[in-house]
Picture 1 (cartoon, rainbow, N blue to C red):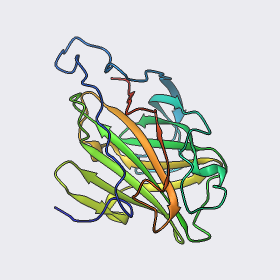
Picture 2: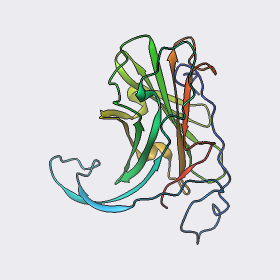
Picture 3: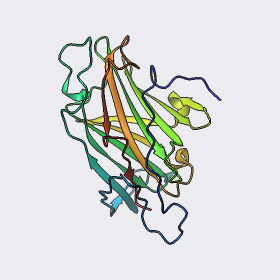
Picture 4: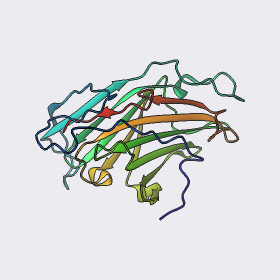
Length: 226
């Protein structure tokens, strides 16, 4: 195991509702009682990220699900000035192309490339890969003066920070995009996920005084297409 802390401290890990169809091979969807089920699967001609060549275009089946989160529902936080708009989650998406996933977290304003003051932010994503409601994997990114630093965790307490996480972070407009190999989530049979965030001064991160948000709200999960 690895004792690398989650971000600078720990957000509450959610527990999803149990997916009653997880043991049914005839089921075509992964839906728990409270799951969000908006899906946008599509086929596109895109560059294959697993291809050893670059610059070419190939037909890659894209599986994608999107979700929204109300802007303005983050907790106010304590000990900060008026929080920047980007400290509020606005939604996001998860898509799979070839052998890679891309998680896109949409913020309430222009996403910063790096921290510019004493405030910091954690964005955590939680993944249930077998439908039992328990979180099997987590991927976190922490905003610092050098950018967003990723860490990967599993339920056994193993952690892989920085380059060892195999997570690439990209900032595009109001989005924080995390690209990682599908193997980092094993081979999910019933993939469900959610995201959460916290923002504040170092002294408040990991406490109820931080500005916090989760998406979807209420420990609900987003179901990924089977």
